[in-house]
Length: 183
Image 1 (tube, rainbow, N blue to C red):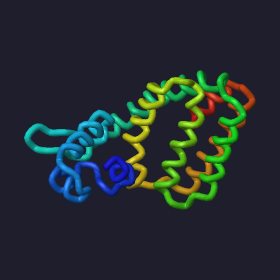
Image 2 (cartoon, rainbow, N blue to C red):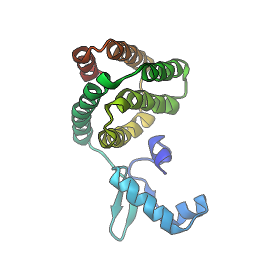
Image 3 (cartoon, rainbow, N blue to C red):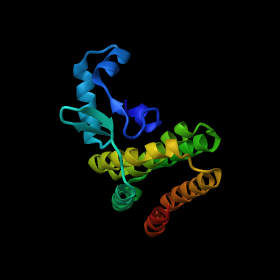
């Protein structure tokens, strides 16, 4: 369900009928209900009393708020990650960037983009913060499925990713934080 929402297969405002989902996935309604509750906690689904569930909607103001929160949390994560980064982290991040360079499927690009940011923040050793960032990321990424970013934006994003890696490798926390704010 999460993947279908993030990939835009289930659209904003679309009704999620437990019986249909259970039949399609060949499971009982109990795990479907549990999944919907989890997705509600992540902000992807809205459970309406006596009316079922729908894929949640976000206003422009809510999306802006999410980006403000992400800005604060992601800079905190990166600031705490850079001092803990080791060569293996840099190698993994560079590999993800190489994969992004050749990816043509937009939904896979979006997933690789998250893998890059996750690998960049993981050395912060702040798993709760990273989970919160991931949930916020998922809340807005589904809109990029409906409105894919242009190749110019993707190229700029990838250049910024490579620059973030270089600044992190150099231990330049102020430079990396400034670039992340712009990114």
